[in-house]
Image (cartoon, rainbow, N blue to C red; front, side, top):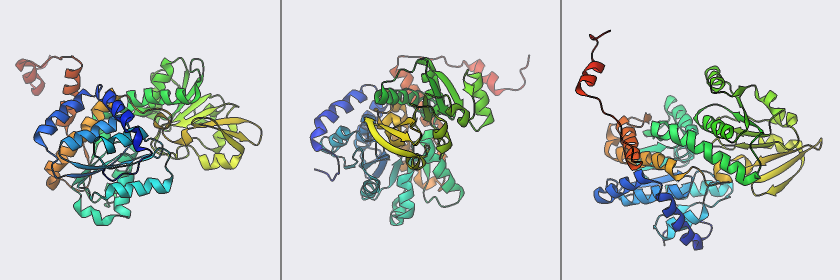
Length: 419
């Protein structure tokens, strides 16, 4: 058996069935897998992947292996691993996996080091922790790197900061910025899966509740949309005037977080920044308030401040911690402040991740073919890849679209034809 560190290898049978179930809703990746098996575009390529170890990720890893890649996988979040999937990838697919749900910080970084032992040509990251370790603790491996991909908004922000400071040592494609990723994964995937995580953890009724969403980026838009659809009164907090205006025009109430803190029943942060829900908010929250995070890192909620303020805490349900403040008020943190959609649920639906991971697979192929032409910076997904994925997705859904006539094409390229 390949090298691994997973919770229980006996879970492999269950994991295999769940990966198969997810694959049924991933027709685009299935078509890429079929081509990869024939063409082997990643033959001899070593890939280190730091991603949420879910059923959909399992399908992506099998696609890369079908393309000839030697893949090592670790988790991009200590609470996002599905242990049965990790076991199945090791036992049934022969892919080295280093991931355990609930692993501590030390184990988390040890697992990143284990994934890097493959001496990668290509990295796949979700949050840029893998890239950061390469640039700080494993600089000796940078000489092998041909390129990488980044899955999420938070990671892209970190990588662009590295590129601007001139410290990024190899080219990376921002998969997150593909239309077929953020318009669907961030909005529809995060929207549905965040609500799913909150409901699984709490079993609370959303209809009639005051639901506060911090931020109005693509992830927050999806969350606000789904909460509204469940009958909640949705409040949005923002620091950007344009986004606040957009949220207003979309029918949501806008107010500062401190004002919302007094009236909210459920709070979700998805901004990518630190201390969005902080001690002043905790003081103002009413008894029974619930708060969670759907941003990549568990820094959006000031958990250390909360612990200092509390006179006691206890685990009420799976992924629900009750904090009793000194005034006797009880407030509730979900999923240890980590991604609630993965900590307390299963993450995005497979149909959405189909497009996201199709981008990952095709961008890995693009990197392996074009790495000598690329500079050490962050690139957008090539338009052709985005277009091909949308075409394949529509085809799988049985949807056809119009095409321009020759006359229409000429008109769009002309300037002489007016009124």
